[in-house]
Image (cartoon, rainbow, N blue to C red; front, side, top):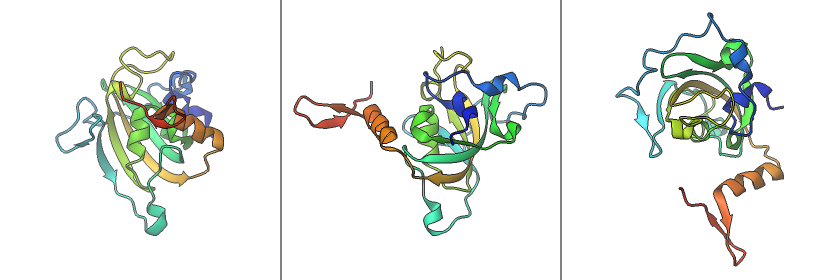
Length: 184
């Protein structure tokens, strides 16, 4: 089952992150490089920056990267650029599971780069997170930083989830065919 604590990572239709109510003085300290992307980080065309913190130890089919419709199991901690932690499955002591097409775009893109057993730090620009003025109550504004460890990938998307994903990336044409949506 999808862990409800992940609602903080979901898009605009989701509820406010439940972890915000439990965070406080015992927050996980922010990494030293939380304020800016370090020179040794890699950056994708979208502006997502990342660094491998722990390489995977996998062989064969276990090295499979998730696709946008796969379900993943992760541990994560998220900070704003000012160092304030806003959510953490690590702090809750409970891994989170969710479908990659149901989270913020920076997570969807970033986790598809990972292999189970790997841990990465992501610097997510606000355009790939909740934006500078989030529509979702309680969501953090601006660019975000996450440490994410990927534990597992399962390919059990339902037909409804596949249809939802395709609706996000395709648009119907008058002749009955579809094409990829153009980025705005």
